[in-house]
Length: 285
Picture 1 (spheres, rainbow, N blue to C red):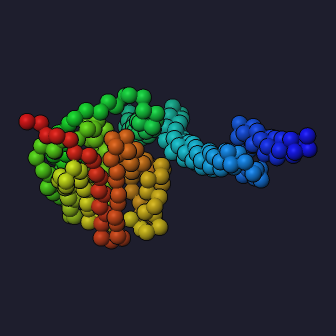
Picture 2: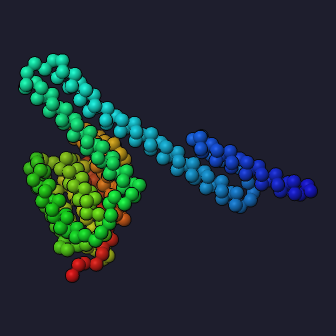
Picture 3: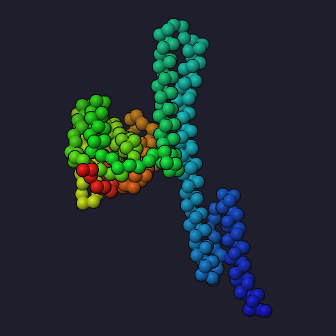
């Protein structure tokens, strides 16, 4: 009886503390569990609960920061729109002043629309709702079209050079692939030097497809480099530049969704290069 009582106590105590920890998770009270259990299975359960709490804590913090940043990004255009409306209703004395107020409202409205559309795309990708079906597509053609379109709006005398292999196929979503490349090209134009160049390379290496977008612009600081994928993050070099800080986060999510991987290398004052790897599929005859 004494032996049974001792064994039962050594099990029920840790189990009770694990139950308390589980209830705490439901109330968002995260704290490390130390049951001092001697049973192997209970020790494994304790480790799993602690790891789960760490992940939930990080997710909770990321969610808080995200909503804080999203609220900040939306608050500014909303404030501008309301201010312009109040001015137009109370003070605008002629058609020219009304037109100017409407132009400001339109610009801020477009800004809000782009932000909402980007957040909606990120949500659809993360939840994998099937909104973006995968298919075998000729990414050589898609890349050529994206570069051709960007040449028309690059500005600052920036030249876009291409070295794109013919008839390269990958299992992707064409809409997301074009959105990904468009964001990388816009980013390169935004931070590129005047009269500089952007080079887009697409080639096949063994069973992989390598897509590179390189510029000779201002580069990314060493301290900023680990954070460029974070939503709404704006590095020191991005001050005074247009953007919401969502482009690279969207690019990373698209690459992951399409079973690829992305890396970046950069040096301040020399430029930045993004490299994306996709799995190669058999070419069309």
